[in-house]
Length: 210
Length: 210
DNA sequence: CCTAAACTGCACACCAGTGTGCACTTTTCA
DNA sequence: TGAAAAGTGCACACTGGTGTGCAGTTTAGG
Image (cartoon, rainbow over all chains, first blue to last red; front, side, top):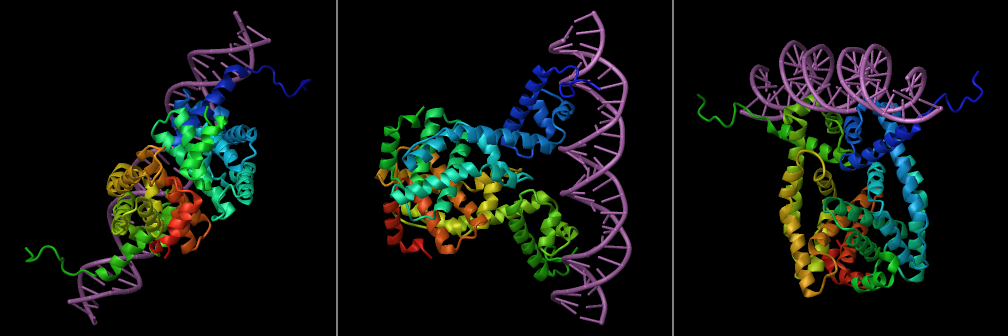
């Protein structure tokens, strides 16, 4: 028996790992346009043959699962550093952060509604959703956020609003500053701030414009 | 040659036509959940065999086309009677009207982004979209609607907001009055009205609550 | 009531996508 | 530089869905 079973004889990870990532990136890009795209399309987009893809992922599901896992990690990690005492501002900041992860967010949005990972994905995203819900609740209590819509519902509407902007961004190429501004305005609008208030809040919050 | 070529010998439309409608209804319901559902699923839902479906629609595409056509007709017809001098109110009213056609609207929303009818469908919907764009533009000029977002973009965001609420309504069964209120609030929010203003406007507009 | 219309059920051809096996070439890294 | 790892290309089996043909049954309506 070999002394150390884990690291097999040799292991040329360098380019293999690079290709694995290329595949995930390609999957992200392609599935964003068409969530039913074939593995062939994805492999080609990554500059590989379909056959090679199977060297990295045993099945289509495995590929998608890996893609979603990576997406969740990225998004959660990006969001978790966001902090702000004022709930509306916090929510706007979260929105803007998500905007910076457009692709990952959109793919994930697609697969929360279709495919075999709906529930697993939804579960993985609970920390983020809890955070949003919590901010909404606190904001309501403080009077900073409208109280004429149920907190849970409002939280989901905010989520929807962000996704709307991301969709818009995908079809008509929007530049970064306008995109961020759009997300922030949409979120604040749904939370109950009038146009003037929202604009004031954004102008007063440097973290909100890159 | 037969004297009258059009009405062939006999024609038992009564139940045949009823089944055709049942198929369209089933298609609407099923495709709303899963836009890739099989014809077998649809036929079964309609209480017919898959084979019978082909007696009404030659291909899957033809069925979907018929479904979309019916949807467009319904929606356009429903919206076209809506009138109001105040742009925000008008837009809220349009939103509420769409809410009453949830199923049709959602199916159409699905197929504006996928399938072979994207463009035809988008084209068929231009009157509605033009109407929204126009209201937004007028409202901006009057100062009734925020002017810090490009009119076209804002129009699409409003569209997105309505769809968000319809999604929400689909997953968590919302009753009619709350649903209408939600749509109205979302639309008004995006247009730039603060929570208080929006509430006031809705309370002052009886057509906005059924 | 009896005939054509509508539906059922089954068989079949066809297609696109998935997943696998295998022989062969290219690449990397020890 | 040489051996293993990674990738290519092709063939193949399998699947689920589509669309059609046909023989037989049910049903509406003149």
